[in-house]
Image (cartoon, rainbow, N blue to C red; front, side):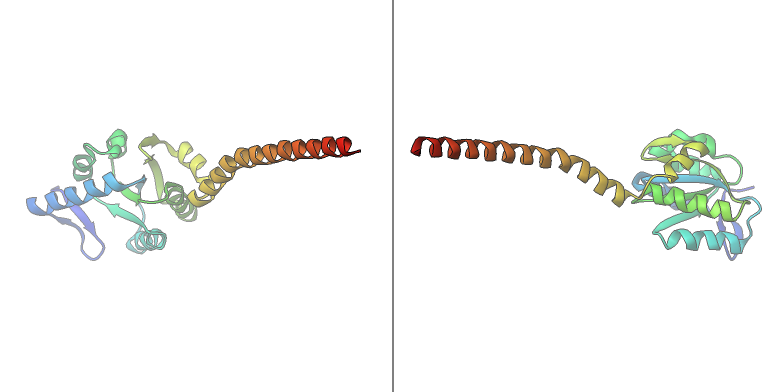
Length: 186
């Protein structure tokens, strides 16, 4: 079968060489920008279910692409996604997230729990290949904004303690000086 791309209205359609080059180029750009990519096996999902998955992901500024494996392998070359080439076998759907990889993993796992036909193969999160168990662990993490605020709190705590310590030392010094002054005046 010739390389093609899945179109919801037309099914799998054949692409000419120019269209294939465009698909590879677009996908390669997406792989370069992505903070997270999750590979799924969508066998058994009908058009409505794939559309539901796409809409669910799109509501969180995520994407879901179904592309021929040969085109995806070519697009992955020279990108962080190239470390997970073994996932490009059989029917593969690719979920892509650009901002928060934890949100991407949560959304895909959430959909796969609701619809068991969607099987998760693995993924690439922040340049590291992940299997299903690693993705489940990542999905247990809080969202990025919460993690950043926790990190800021942890970084701020020692500075706050130092400021209080210095203030206490300075206060004690001032009290000692005042006591010494009062003692001299008496």
